[in-house]
Amino acid sequence: MSTIAPTVAPPARPLPPAVPTVPIYRLSVAQYQAIARHGILGPEDRVELINGWLVPKMTKNTPHTVATGLVNDALDAHRPAGWHVRGQEPVTLADSVPEPDLALVRGSRRDYLNAHPTAADVSLVVEVAESSLAFDRTTKRTLYAEAGIPAYWIVNLVDNVVEVHTAPAGGDYTAVQAFAPGDEVPLVLGGVEVARVPVAELLP
Picture 1: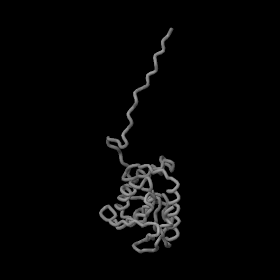
Picture 2: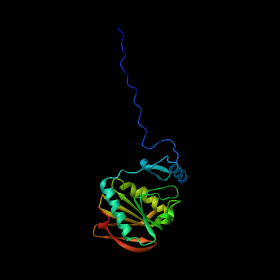
Picture 3: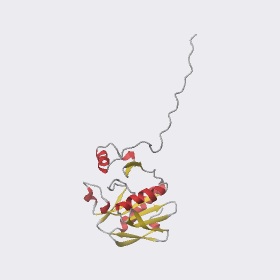
Picture 4: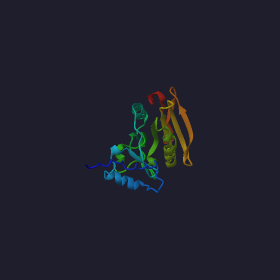
């Protein structure tokens, strides 16, 4: 009678750390754009280049989606001629290619057939924040300030306010105001206030 040896499970492999402890390679903007051109990363991969790292985007829940649409509608209604609204599209910075939820960009869409807008083309970026609030208040804030983008709005769904970060200097925004329902947010383009947007138009 033959004897069948009991199956022994292989030893469990330890999980890799969240951030590798060995040196890792950072991508340049040119390398990231080449990867995109060759179709290696597609829309389903949901990543953006932040400070040379590929960073996964947060999953969107329904309030985030609704708020993004509301802000898009409000900006489109209040923007003057010569500007357009871009939604979740790349902006090329020195070592990053973020895809803010919304951006107000100089010129027309056809002006950017051959290259994405740079910081010089952008007067306002907007991030809708719930689970991403801490990231948007730190990493994204520093990123946009260092690039010199004049205004950064965080549509804060946690506290039900719109945070307006302005006056970039020294790698940070030096002024911040929170606007609650009932307030109006000044929309400033090219250093000129062109409209005041009711917060009620921006929050779901």
